[in-house]
Image 1 (cartoon, rainbow, N blue to C red):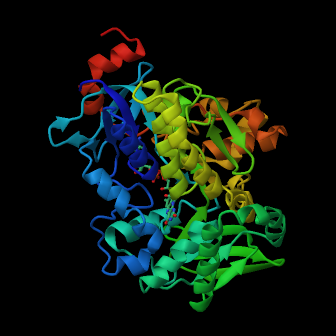
Image 2 (cartoon, protein in one colour):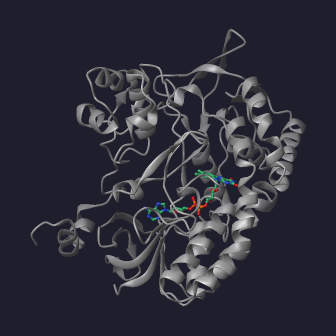
Image 3 (cartoon, rainbow, N blue to C red):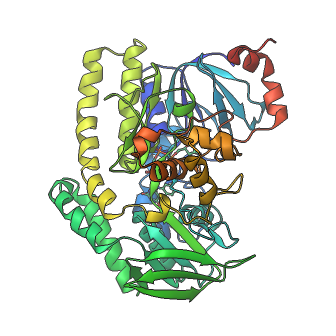
Length: 472
Ligand SMILES: Cc1cc2nc3c(=O)[nH]c(=O)nc-3n(C[C@H](O)[C@H](O)[C@H](O)COP(=O)(O)OP(=O)(O)OC[C@H]3O[C@@H](n4cnc5c(N)ncnc54)[C@H](O)[C@@H]3O)c2cc1C
């Protein structure tokens, strides 16, 4: 494919906004996304949703994406759906898996790249979380949005974070039932969050949405259990129950289905594989890529917009994409620095207002303790079946960080390339060695960041071998 000015990876709010702004400024743009339709996580399947009354079920936030999707659909921007990027080489050539209508997608070189790959759910490695019948809330929401499927009627939702409650409301609106929502947040978390209240008032719409959501769930008589700990999923070949402690007592609920959620973390695979600088954000309990005010990483020409940079929500993600694209247009000599600054000023102000409620949410819904210190028997690396106990042993043997734990145990070496275990592994090494997690460091991601067939690798061999320095 002919080189382009800008490759945008991810067609969620951040990626679409970046692409539209850049194209408006006169840059050539290609957008690629592994989903069959644009929209990302939040606006997934918006243009042909299978639910009969989807507006009432999925809510106004879902439909807020319609104008953005409409503008993208009529923009004429080159768009490759059902296509994953599995590698970005040092010369900014991206390698794809998935076929377009014209056959396999050839590698593409771009002057600038916007990583708008979004967030993933934080893994919650409870004992028994790999048992059939246990999955994440986000996965269940994808089934609802794309196939109109509801969870079983005895489902139990477990963990912390706004998505847990948002999904509960969507299930009720769709006519489903929920046996219980087990929330791991403690009274102390509410108390700690209070100090962020005044600043959060700068984002009143978000707060109002939260208040309305909790009131609606009360009307639905949601069985909400708060302050749970020591959670274990019970069952051999299928989930049969969930056990937890509240107020010093152990409780057990029989169930066939458990949905887990512990908040969101940015997807850092590409920025990590490309050697960008990262830091540990102790407010959001996650590794995040270092970016300047224009969302440019420490690797020149590589921008990270939206939740892939830090968890900010859909509206802020869209604004960050637009701000990044203005800087790209300026570096690409399509607009002047004065034009860039004038256009970016109101966007930046709106972005900061939207972020005002984040510290409140992050403090109110911290991840459950099991995200950092799972029980010994819990599987941490699902791809390679490595338990917390094996990782603790590797740390005791002297592995100073997740990269060395990987060499000793294979944790992080499987198909997901550490997406599910990297953060927990780093936390376990920190716990065992008594060091802060930022000193333990993050797992360096390796290519391919997404599963790819040998045929697809072979198809891009001449270019790929050149890029990684092997003889052709
Ligand atoms: C599971 C889940 C459910 C959520 N549900 C809600 C909700 O109901 N309400 C709400 O307000 N917020 C929700 N959020 C948060 C919300 O989705 C984000 O705040 C918002 O979508 C961020 O936009 P974004 O453009 O940064 O990323 P996203 O919208 O996540 O878009 C990222 C896109 O990148 C694509 N992508 C990633 N990696 C690759 C790759 N290697 N190759 C090609 N494409 C790739 C993905 O397919 C995706 O379409 C959810 C988040 C998650 C993870």
